[in-house]
Structure formats: C-alpha cells, structure tokens
Image (cartoon, rainbow over all chains, first blue to last red; front, side):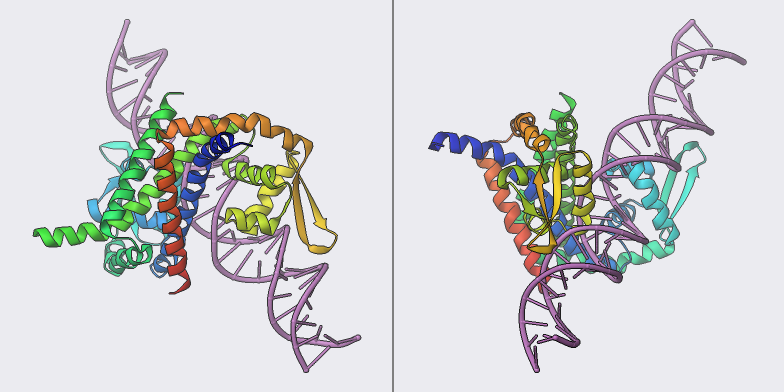
Length: 154
Length: 154
DNA sequence: CACAATTCAGTTGTGTACAACCAAAGGTAG
DNA sequence: CTACCTTTGGTTGTACACAACTGAATTGTG
C-alpha cells in the first residue's frame, strides 16, 4: 500500500476512532462519578435528573426528557426508582391529566447539600482547565448538532 | 450574586456540562450508526468486535476486552449473539482451556465488503474535517487517560 | 508432588437506552 | 356532537455496561 492509499484508509478509520474514543471517555467519566454518587445512592443519569429538579424545582416528564435528551422508556423506570428511594414525588397535572409533574421531596432537596462536593472532585480528575473544558464542550455540542442534522436528512 | 461568585458557580458546573455533552454526543453517534449497521444486522458494539476481528483475524475474549475496553460480562452475551447470527466461531484454545478464541466465519468475513461504505457516510455526517477529528480524538484520549489515572489514585 | 493463588470466561442482578407499540386525554374539523 | 388526530406517559422487548460472584484451568511455591 503506497502512502496515499494508506492515508485514505487512515482517514476512513478516523470517524470510528473518534466514536470509539468518545464512548471510552464517556465510560471513564461514568467510572469517575460512580464512587462519588454511590455515597449519595444515585447513578449518573439519576444525578442528572436531580440536578435538573434542584435547579428548576418541578418539571414534567416531557420537560425532563427534552432537557436530558432521554425518552420516556428510559425516564419512566428511572423516575420510579427515584420515587421508591423517596427522593422525588410524581403526580398527574390536574389541568392536563396526560402530564406527570416530577418534584423533589424534602429528602430529595436535602440531598443537594451532600452533592455539593461532587463537581469539584470530578473537575480535578479531568486534569483540564476551564478554558479547555469550555472548548471541548463547544466542540462536542457542535458535533452533536451536526449528527442530529444529518440524521434528519437521510 | 456578584460576578466572581457567578463565575465560580459556572466553573463548578463545567465538568457536569462536559460530561453531559459527552454522553449526548455518544448517543448521537450511536443514532447515526444505527440505521447503517441495521442493514448489516449489527449493533455498534458488535460492529466494533467485527472490525477488530477483520483487522486481526482471531482474538481471545480477553484480547477483545482489552482492545475495546469491555469486560466479560458485556462480551460473553454479545459474542453469543454474533455466534447465533453465524458471523463468528468460538472455540476453547487447546493449549489453554481457559481461553476462548473468537474468529470470523466465512459469512462474517464476507460482511466486511458490505460494511465498507459505513465509515465514509459517518464522516460526512460529522461535518468535520480530518484535522478537527484528529484533534478531538487526541483531546478525548488525554481526558480518558487523566480520568483513568485519577481513578487509580483515590 | 500438593496446594494456594491467579487467570479466564461465564453467569446473575441492576440499571440505563431506545424502538415499537399502547391507552388515555385533549384538541379539531365536519 | 362525532370522528379523527395529536400529545403524553407508560409498557415490552432487545441490547449494552458493570459489579460481584462462580468454576474450571493453569501457574507458582514450598
């Protein structure tokens, strides 16, 4: 294989390598969060839901799904586990019985204090500065937007 | 809240936002691969296994796990599904009966041709050039390494 | 040789993640 | 008012992903 052919083959492998690296990093992040969240009795997606509720008070399942990019098939059982743990309350909206409003209980709100140390410890583990993290986030969001757009025009 | 306090709060949220963006991008990549791989009857992790086998011929479960960063609890059922689909063959290594060697069948090898178009179509969907993809991959790999190192020193 | 420690694949249990489908509630055109 | 359509949350089925454990095979050590 000559130089040009080798380069072309490498190029075709690039997307795969990026996708693979992406999954590896996502799992490494999970592994970093896991022991910290374990002390709170939360998984990472459950932590995301609690963060959204701490920030915005009460949300419907649909609003949570849009904010976290998760569908009802993922959220429904997750929210039932959080409810069973006594951290959130679920109730049909009286004005639209199709909607279910999710809100933190007192115990769920109290958990916020104990969760305060998590972000700092994770940021340390990344070994990156604020500027680099901001740049990375922008790159990832742009990439997600491009993939979403491509998915809608097949 | 004054400017400095707001900046500090934003900084603490950064790791979360990066981690969230990371998961979102990983899922967007999955969604981009899904319809292409569906035609081949593969999921993305199964595609990764087949790529490794196409490249290197035959690997033990342990070698696959190290290459793809997956453990036996994930690989065992995945490989059984690939075997049930007739794409790979599994056999105990006669020289070490603990090891299981996985190799593509003729059908598995033949699938490589049909998979040839996948990388190009994904790369188009990312909307990124080679240089940007290379840079992103380097950033992600560094980040994974930093998180792995931090995980080993708690 | 005997026997403890290690390696390797597999199993079980829990928790995402998504597609496909369902039922109830609400809205709308006729 | 009725028939249709959309919205919303839920359920089912399939497939990762990992922790914890099991059991067989191998290796190391006295």
